[in-house]
Amino acid sequence: QQQVKQSPQSLIVQKGGISIINCAYENTAFDYFPWYQQFPGKGPALLIAIRPDVSEKKEGRFTISFNKSAKQFSLHIMDSQPGDSATYFCAALRANYGGSQGNLIFGKGTKLSVKP
Amino acid sequence: DTGVSQDPRHKITKRGQNVTFRCDPISEHNRLYWYRQTLGQGPEFLTYFQNEAQLEKSRLLSDRFSAERPKGSFSTLEIQRTEQGDSAMYLCASSQASTGELFFGEGSRLTVL
Image (cartoon, rainbow over all chains, first blue to last red):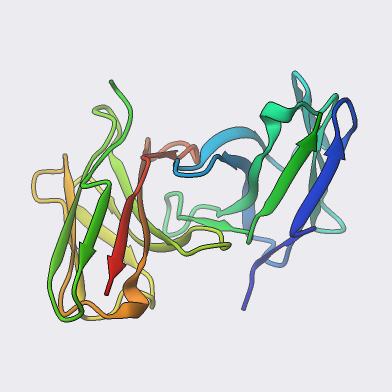
């Protein structure tokens, strides 16, 4: 059972355009939603994260939009650059599992290519 | 370098052999996680430790897999009697228990021939 569904699988955007990646989750116990960026041969690196008490978080060119009622969240990359070409993963963390944080559940990833 | 360190970065082995991976977390982090990632997929949770206690194990962690964190610092992941299906990137991450922010290492890529 896939608890975090991510789309699209791949995305091609022109330089300067907006990249949008979507995720949907099922478990209402999730309370932390990060996005990770991964370059080939490297481990995932935290990009930006949000908790469900806010609907949007912006850091530089990266914005997370969160819709708690729809159980969906998305990553927007403004002014996309060739250096943003990477695989992006959404994830969700189960809250207070036995009194402490549990483990991250990842989506399957979106391969972003930004064309010059 | 104060990030998460993994060793070896790449291991090629023959089916049936045992392999061991080591992870050195960020020193002030009390949580340590092991994930597995196959090509084109997201990381899949295997197990995690808080200090030296192994708090959770995934169903993916068959009895051929064992992980330890004996002194609450570095951790090892051993795979016995490797199978071709074990070929994957094994990722280690660490965090503070009070946050959800995981810091990943660069991974150990296992190829089973």
